[in-house]
Image: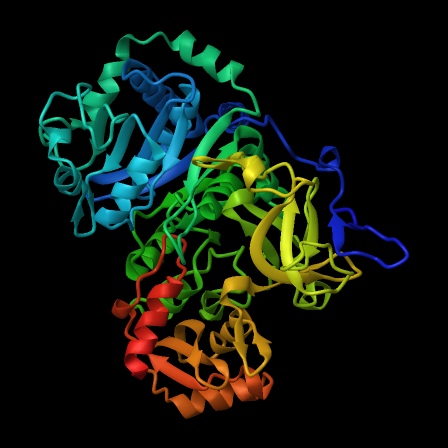
Length: 568
């Protein structure tokens, strides 16, 4: 990838640009229908996905994935979805999630991806603010029956025939269809087979024409921010931005058809990063998705062995659970090839790993994942502790948080970004009210740029801990803590203090069986960080105490309240 351009003057400013977008190799059609059509043409009879169920194993080729997406599109057209109609998709990682999201785009609609971690109150907010007309959902996810949740939220939703829903609470919602849960559903909710049968009489050529006329500038999807500090915000992304990210990861990972990528992931595709990095990366390179509905380490290890997975995509806390699984020692994971040598799974005796994942990166849901990164096999020396360099078409600047003025190169302030994958805006808020006069999106993240064009992310500005007149980045402390062999999950926060303003508090979930104590943790951190960054307090939690967001982040406000309560 080309060297980034640093905007130089008499005194260089903190402005860095990536190469022009038209110099980026490997980009295909820049719409979601175009992406699916193109990968189908390239890889038609290759396996696109595999899904293990209690009733057997489901395998779809690329050609079958296209056909299943067309079926959903026809059913949605029959349900009244046309140009820009919004379709909620509330499912785990299963074949129907993929066909539903791409099928929505084939029908001309906008897919609204909803977190399966949502509480009833959160789901109420998501349905209301997104103004969906159709909701396609997974009936049973772990212990949650979403048909019952929906009935409790609005009894009127299931009191009439499908397609005739009327609700003052959700005035746009007209249709509910569920996958799983048997042949019969509650009144007012169609089963998946009956829903698909609706579209049998819809002309296929109408779906084809809609797909062809979709424009890169049209709205493609609405993903929600993780909501670690507030209610999730609905983020509208254009086909162009989504498709760019779906295509570009195969270049960054150096993947191609000859690699026969088999990607396992149990992280929800409703998180934009997993959608682009796992799903997009795999399909654009002709690979197969090994789907797991919800994460279970024993089942995951079995899937990796059975399906000869070579590219696992997991969160750090999931890697940690692998080592604690009872079948860890007996699993044959020798098929794993594209696994970062620094992850716990690389320590398995059957794994030989010298690969480095593109992990030096920065992005936001507002830019539909990454905007800076280093490609696979970038050394730690080259990355230099940074979050990569800007991708093609992307420009960063760092501004003073008080004045908004661009800082001199190296100055610490707020990271601002603009580029081809930047959102169209938040639900209810036009983009013009979100970006500055130059079109930059203020991310709310703190960091700086160096003279090599590298971005250094230092954490959320609102999370920066101000203790005794010094600023402490929670991210920096967490990176040290998570390297401790007994630490499974960690989140560093600041709590009020009479004289220091705030004190650094480490909130830790230990590994099962780990013997940790506060003094040992502080000593471990003190060996690597300055004394003012060492947590004054260390609070231990059980994993059940802490609620994670859909993208495996700990809710900041929740953990602060829990820590304050324990310390009190």
